[in-house]
Image 1 (cartoon, one colour):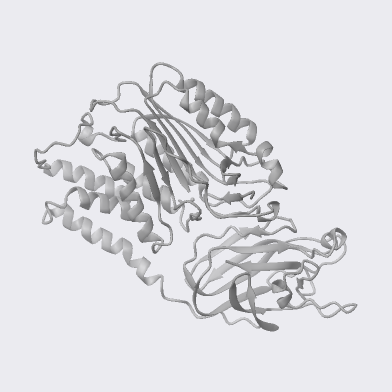
Image 2 (cartoon, one colour):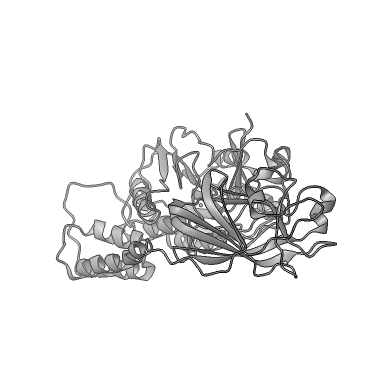
Length: 485
């Protein structure tokens, strides 16, 4: 069975480390990295956070001693060129560690993972091998390197904007085997979808960069464990990072207090006040739950220390808004034309629409057409203009988790009908949890996933029409189908 999965970074991260056992001395050779963040896609939905994720990871890796080449919004030619240069650099004799990081859309096909350049146009799953970049091909290049350690991080399991291009779909990245001497980490369990994030970074990249920066003297296993705990906390345990490992040596992103990385000793370590103050300053600069937890984990043996007490208070204040987010705003008072109770995809909802085009030639254009599974029907707004400001409001009997919203844009009765009527260009999205954001919609009648972040459990969602692709004949704006998942 063919499987195609799109993952937007926004968030799986797969960290594949070909890691040979070495002694406890610090690495003497170079650490090199290639970092790519793709947000602004031409032919599919853009992602909010990969650019920011790449910038954050670049800064984090440079602090860890890596020489970094950073690419933002790279097309296929640029990605292939830089991957080739990076592979050749890894074959040089003076490289001890190589790291590749990618954030953006990704595809799973026949159990293999692909990276999607910003100019890729994938209309069918058979085109993926030509439009995207096969991760396995690049793994072969890295496996031939002379570096002691090779690391690949893929933050590419966020959503599936190309749903309509595949004959069968599944969720999440394909599982990658961990051969001898490797460490594999996913932002979420294989087969699950990670989150792009409400803030400037995906939940996993934010947690991972904070854990790396504050994790001096801690092994890579400890770093990823800290990141996993943070992701579980901020997503309400809806996203569970996953690791498999067969490494036999220890790898440290940072040695402790600037000293060479050493294996653990039975001798008790007594931190100095200056050392605690230095790490407190770093955690304060990062100001994330992961950073404060890492700080408190390092100094749990001195609970009465002045900086430890301050850190406990900072962590409590930082996490307080998470508790408040569970409070729901009242439903907006908007005058609605019609309401319906239907199953939109696999979720039952009350849908109210602010306007409906009247019956014409025996055809009806009511909002329940969005749930009938028929591309030959559509909801068409009834505004005298383009429909700007018209609203779709979904409400639920109880707080409901919405992971994805899929739409088939336009009136898909025929190609001619699609072009004659208007299509959605953009929505303003609001929810009962207080989220509000503007999202772009691709001008395509195929199913596409709206690029919304993780919303949590919501009582209602509104989609307000803020932009349209004008039809060649009619000013009415239409949507054929809408599904909630």
